[in-house]
View (cartoon, helix red, strand yellow):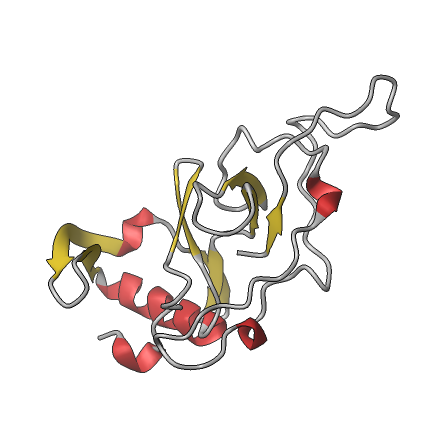
Length: 169
C-alpha cells in the first residue's frame, strides 16, 4: 500500500485536464506515504495511519487491474479511508523485477483462529513463491500490504503487518 485516498468526487464542469479512467495513477508523496515508522513494533501494536491524500479526490478508481501498474481501488473498509493507492505487485529477486501474483500460492484454505475467534487464510507457497514472498517480506516488513483480488483490496490486518522473512518457510 502506498497511501490512502478519499472517495471519488467528480471534478467541477470545465476542469482542464481532469483525470479519467485512462489517466495513469501517480505515486503518493510524503507525508501521505505508508512507512515502517507508522508501525509501533510488536505484533499486537496498532498502526499509525498517515493522513489521506486529497490529491486523489478527482481520480476515478482504476478500471483495469494490471499488477504492473499503480492502481486506485476501494479499501473495503480495511483502513480509515475510502480508497487506497497500491503500487505495482512486483519485487526485485535474482536481479530481475518479478511479479508477485496469485501464482505464488500452491494451495490455500480458511481456518478459524480459536485464540481470537477470527478467520485467517492459511496458504502454501510454490518454491519460487516462497522466494518472492520472502523478498517481499524483507522489503516491506512492518508495513501494511494489500492483497488486490481482482480490483478489490483486502489489506492484511493493521495490527499484524507482513511476517518477517524468518517466519516464512
